[in-house]
Image (cartoon, rainbow, N blue to C red):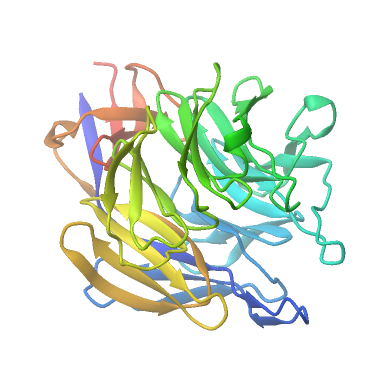
Length: 390
C-alpha cells in the first residue's frame, strides 16, 4: 500500500541577492540579503528575511530536506536559517564558501576566493568540506594535498547516483582556469576526479542528469562555451557549443536537458542531457539573465540585475510569456523554490514515471521497500510516500 503526499504546487521562492560592492574603494554599497515571495498570489511582494550586514557577498541558498530551514553561503560564513523567520539557527565561519548541497545529515560546501591585493586565488587546505546539517560543525574535509580532494577552487555542487559532485575550475586565477569534475562517494567518502579536456575549462553550473551522471556548463577562459557530461566512472565527454562565453549567466535543468544562456544572446539554448546535442531553444525575455529556477508546468523564474543599483525577479510561462515582475535587491544570483504539500489518493494520479527516490535523510533508494520516501517524477513533481511492507 502507498499513501502519497504530492508536491502539486511551488508555494514560495527564496531569493538570495548578492549585494553590491565598489571594487575601487572596497565599500559595500548594498549588503547581501535573503528574501521570499509567495508564488501562489497574482501580485507577489518580496519579504526580506535577513540582511547579511558585515558581508560583501553571498553566493548560495538551498532549502533543507525537511523544508523547515535554509542554508546560506555568505562570503566567509555558512548559515542555517529558519525558513519562516530568517532567524539564525546555526553558523560556521568558512572563508570562501561558494556553493552548497545537502546529502543526508551533511551539508557539502565548495570553496574559492580571490585575494583583493594580488587578485589571485586564495589557497585553502580544503576546497571541499562537509558540515553537520543540524549545527554546522565541521565534519570532514578533502585535503588539496596528495589528491585527497580538489586541488583548486570549485563552484557548482550537486548529488547524483550516490555521489556528491563538484565543479573544479580555479576560476579565481584568471588565465589559469582548469576543467575538472570531482566526485565524493557518499558511502566510502573516497574522492575521484575526471578531466574535461582542453575545451572543458572553467565548469560553473553542475546538474544531475539522471542515471548517476552530471552535466556541466563551462565558461572556458571566457572565450567560448562548452558542455561536459560525466557518469562518475568512465571518461567525460565535452562538446564546444559557442564561441562566446556563458560567463556567469543563468542555466537550469529542464526536462531531459540543460537550458543555458550564452553572453550576448537574449534567448536560451537547450542541450540533450545524454548526447549534449542541441535540442531546442527558448526565447527567454530577450535579455541577459543572471539566475533562473524551473517550476512545474514549464514556468520559470528569472533573476535580472545591473549589478550596481537594481534587481528584479520575473515569472515566465515558456509558452504563454510574462506573468509578473517583483523588485528585489541588487544581483539576485540564486533562487531556491520550496514546495507546498497536499494530499492526493496515490502516486498513480501522476501521468508520469518516477525517475528517482530518496529517504528522508536525502540518501538515494533503490527498488521497493517500506518506510517514508521522497519520489521525483518525470514531470518535475515530487511526492512524499509512505510504503508499508504489504
